[in-house]
Length: 103
Image (cartoon, rainbow, N blue to C red; front, side, top):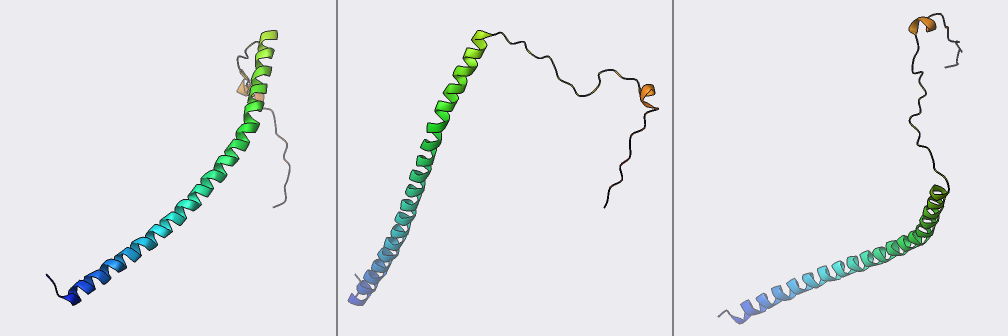
């Protein structure tokens, strides 16, 4: 067994360790509280968006289903901005206009 001084020194070390742990626990609890507040804030924002999106989505679905039931739409095959058949010889005499521009 150690002397009284050794035991007092060990006790002081343990007390200091406990203070450090308490300080760390306090910091972590504060961080946890902040994160809980952030989660609550984000949850409220999400609830707001859901309350707007769900009715709009349901309304759009109802309009789409009523449109599809009332009429049969034909499916488009393709849309192209390029000519499908052209001859380079026909375009050889075409000159494009030149428009000068300032720097």
